[in-house]
Length: 125
Image 1 (tube, rainbow, N blue to C red):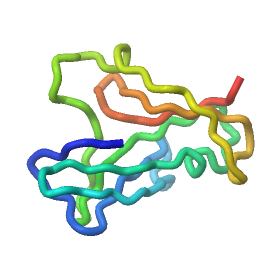
Image 2 (cartoon, rainbow, N blue to C red):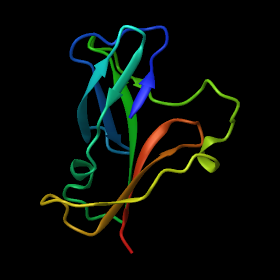
Image 3 (cartoon, one colour):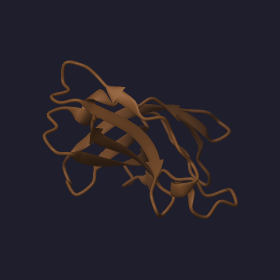
């Protein structure tokens, strides 16, 4: 994914955190590549999000964590004229595969009601 950070810098060692909704200690991290103009990119693999999954659904909230150990910035989309992104922006549903996946799973990014970016895992049908 690609984004732009306004009003702050990332620093060396910045990361994206996927935080399992409702579980304070369940976090997966991925490195972030930042540029001078505020643009950043990251790749978040779905397999670690599905590891050991026994539930029907998991929701992971995405946070951008600068290297300065701040608590993080919720990743969202704010600079457009679409108020309710959840019903407008759709991303592909993809199968999640790998040795750590314990049940058939699909995953896709989506915008929450607050226009923040999250990832949803469901049991594949």
